[in-house]
Length: 478
Image 1 (cartoon, rainbow, N blue to C red):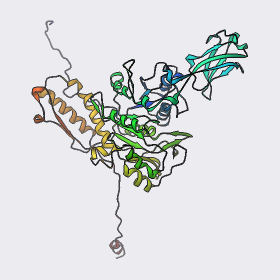
Image 2 (cartoon, rainbow, N blue to C red):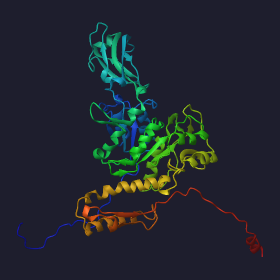
Image 3 (spheres, one colour):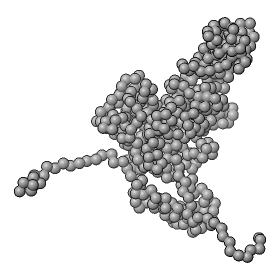
Image 4 (cartoon, rainbow, N blue to C red):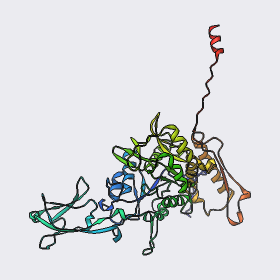
């Protein structure tokens, strides 16, 4: 140590730790995307893709208006364009290198019209081979270029000396989104590579991007009970630490409203971490799955409340102009129909009432079979998940430090300061964290803390009693 003589100073560690909160509505979406149309799409199959903007999503995943085939396109358009919320993770299960997901196609003596030959909307650009009638190969960028037209078809445009050709032969591969099955979305471990696929990738989200999944969606797939069940399982425990994400699932829009509750119960859409939605929603000629809109709406509602999920999405405006079944049959529910047949059975729907089109319903899918308030209210489930996921983010740095009174006091003081900071706007006053010695095991290095708090349930019913009081009239005329 250098010899010192004088007055010196340094900044000491703050006695209170800085709290780190989980993103209350960070969404991870599973489905299919035409990554062959994205300028950065190659190799993006069964990988977590993070996009903060619409342009980033399109560059990495491609885009198509054929949402029934390419389900992730619906999500990226809705989240970024309709709701203006960003920061979403995608997992695309379409793999252009999988021979079972592509099909070889060819055109012989294809006529060249205005220097162009038009292929299909699902043609893979990297597979296109063009030859003259005498089988002389043409080179891309030298003899032809590729582009997408307004109908989304891949177009070959002959240039240079090749522009004089009147007919060419073309070989290419077409994507086959219709062969992709629920099992591909559910995923597993690839036996050939040992790598996770589909929903197994969710455990990689935090290590790669430092993001905790708060919402899990798979529009176009979650109406399959097998997919919905796995979504619920993944929402239960992520990375062995982060718990209770919310899986937003769709009930098939193939039945009338009075049959939805029976289908929900028969197909086990009654799990603890699920929100069940019905029917489909429309906007500007596009047809959406409800889960697409509800996940974006949650992000908007949270953003308006300091990014804390302390308000229910129910009675909040959806960006929609109608509701319908899969076959486009309009759905216009009355209040009694929405309440008695859907909300009463733990189903979120859309209602066009005093505030225009809104989400309508406050309960998780486990309602009405489950009665614990902490589990049945959407807002309480999400608040507990938000707080629970924030705890390891804030206190992970304390792991393996000495189990001393100073460290214990630091954790208690830090958490109580954060709780006081969000009361009474987000939670009821009186929330607290205490260290519980009798439930701790000091010899084995285990410290137990008890957090008591009460997020506000939604004010689902407002009652007024109206009384005619003639005494007021008599007093006025006396």
